[in-house]
View 1 (spheres, rainbow, N blue to C red):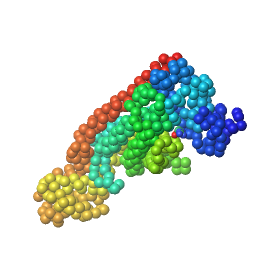
View 2: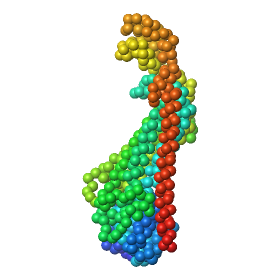
View 3: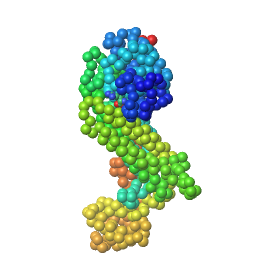
View 4: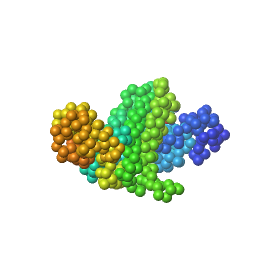
Length: 502
Ligand code: ARG
């Protein structure tokens, strides 16, 4: 170690060497060394950078920018750096500088040709996109698992009647299948948003150099193809500057986390009411109260929405007002995306497990379904079907509810309704509708079954939505597999091209 290369504040004493090829002696020391470094976050893009290096060198050779022998030497050194692993990298300002340093350490000056016609600016943007693709596909996969769990449970409970709530107050009877598919539909849109974001992540900035392009005859389409990108980000200044693709991904994740936080909240509330029981695997207990079984996992799922929203806010705040082109602020934008994708993917996985293994208590649900006179709307609908204006029918049933007061937990019975009819409509109830139909309307199960409009809680309506949901999960799984295949075959292509230089 030379004097200048003594570790400064924030340096990693574990790493060999100190002066990377970028900083050299002039910028090698100083108290801000550690502050400048992104090495801790860069492990995540180590493999991405190796792929980007390989694709770039292959393209340089194909274009005659470096000769084949030099390309072969560099590619062999890159393989060697890959085999040694991230922890063996020399110290550096970031993984890009450290890998380049490691290549030059191995093969000498010829290694310095690797960085021809590029900059760390296009390099890092490419690496982030390359790695993020995998993460977005993993996140999509967990949304599919959750949707499958919801659709499966909906199939088991298409006919299980339950109370439906608005304002957390009993509102109308529904079915568990209907409730679960309401979340499946929402998560399906989250899947769609992630796919949509993926398409724009999947563009290559490589070949833009610092921002102003390069006088070398680079083939940007070629490196894009070797790295599995669907084309390039055309304008070289835009390509190195933009992180809008991070915003799109984190926004989609934040919305997904918000969706799932609602599911977690509902399940926690329902378990509090004894309507559903969480599996022990997704529960926790108290260190002092031995009887406790708490929905801690759901609470952490719920809280993840806060982390994701904070990440989105942090990211946008970092990006706001950044001038063209590259600014080092961008280094701090990236970890927001890694944090969000990790946290949300894990939370969705846990939510899927909790939903799949929860036990719905059919008897308790049936008992609760009629609570709070939740069938009142059904009685008003019945009268409206007989030609009573809905507003009048609403007034009459409200009158009955008032008569029943708090005396009956489940609201007005036939007698109260009949009295209300006399008072509000001026006729007895059986003038409008027979008693049997009124009793049926007061029954939660019959009430839910009667709501058979498209997308409603009736078992047939639930079955239709469920089979559509299953078909859409399948279609999304096919689309996911196609994206993964595209990445795998690009990987194969790159490997084959690299092997030509052996
Ligand atoms: N570590 C940097 C980042 O994440 C790489 C780019 C450095 N470029 C530069 N011009 N300083 O953004």
